[in-house]
Length: 291
Length: 190
Image (cartoon, rainbow over all chains, first blue to last red; front, side, top):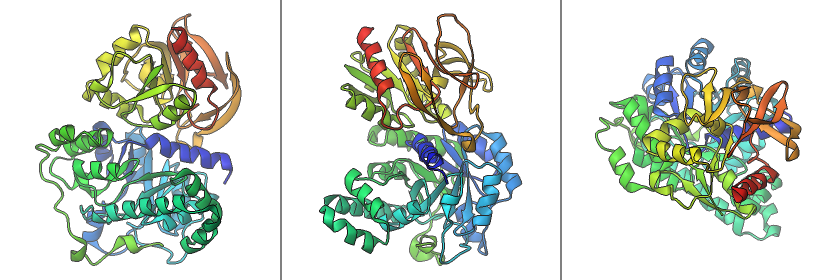
């Protein structure tokens, strides 16, 4: 992968900041999302809550469905491939997807190796629970990071844990002496150069979004206040009573995430939120996929 | 000098950093009450124009900013910001501020795989590394008062019209702050 392309791919993630990326399964949903103010949509066959309900192996979506969504909207279209499934990623690149999510929401195709994302021109976003995971994905070529959270639950607790863990580890790296960074790189299992970047800049070298369990405007505000640069909403929108209204409310909550009075207004009469399930109640823990 | 940066969505922090490094004070505009009368200039950053345009209206910022632009407030607009300013979009029925008499094509180079970087001449500034991300281009200008500042492959990528400086690329990405310093000179001289 040429260096220029990587810079362009990181740049696209920068343009998405302060925005909401919404899971959609049909062109109609994509249009609702775009109209509600989504800065990008994630095309997938089933939203995470339904993947949980259906069980079995879940894979990359039908390219025809993805193309239908690409034709329906003018905003960037993302799609998921399985962890390690570089052939699925090649297919998504061939249909000119704007961003690939190498995602733990789908069944992993490889239990050791992630995709060598440097081999691709098209950008990748990957999930991470802590700094080590984030920097390993970046080293493999990811140009955007998101928390894993626990997808399809409507439960924000894991996304909060991952964001706090990331912040805490970044703060620790920043406070180290320079001669301590080699040991930090070793314990995080990541290259020294990336640790040095975090030490000098106090942040990841790519954009970091929140994902997994966001269901309300308040959830979005919480994640933004914890340092997320934008928000993915998966099942939270189209599993709720009034998707268009909830989507628009979450978009505005992300822009004015510290304005509690506005978020109070936005939170009124949104209809039913997705029911949600707690981690203790589920058998399939997606966040543990891919290390 | 105080520059207001539209901060409803997109890469506004990058502009803030460039401008602060060049000696300006910045205020982020997220809602109507943020738009005060002591703002000397306005930045419309890159991001998604559909999102920004919608939020401008819903957060009640559209009228007041449009009036300020029409009354001569200096504006720097990049990528999505240029779309917000354009009088006409050739592939989209929507328009936003529509204060810049040009016809613009959205996503003119296609999807992300069409994004590119190129060094080209930017009039009044010189050779400049231009970063295009799902960028628009200007198909035509509708007034002789629009000064074309840069052209790549026959398409216009930078213009100045009175108080409005509009670029289809992203001078806020990278380290070169000459565009931002040029804009601050514009503000200073206005």
